[in-house]
Amino acid sequence: QVQLVDSGGGLVQAGGSLNLSCTASGRTASRSVLGWFRQAPGKEREFVALSTVALSAGGVALISDSVKGRFTISRDDATNTVYLQMNNLKVEDTAIYYCAAGRSILPKPNYWDHWGQGTQVTVSS
Image (cartoon, rainbow, N blue to C red; front, side, top):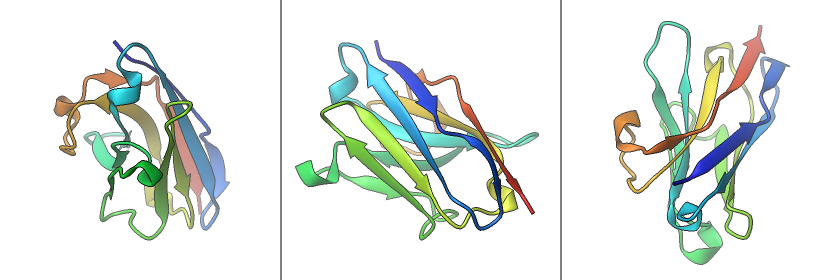
């Protein structure tokens, strides 16, 4: 089992930045792929980014094309924490952002095993 606690959301103006964090705990946390999904009102949950292990340890990071160049994912294996640095935010980035843990790198929510409670990101124009 993996428990996830995500935080860092808030209200920001377009063009601004936010940094989300998610700490994983539990027996298999260190071996889990950690990632971020988001869900806007009336829309399906969509993949944002994932990290297998820290890049410094040879890990792999994947970023959705919709946020590439603006969002960066990083991971601290010592604390099992994954971060999502979001720059140049747009109104269309408004959503609830969910941290997720699993064994897959497939960008579909049903392939992921554990979810955080979600953190609201609201970008105003």
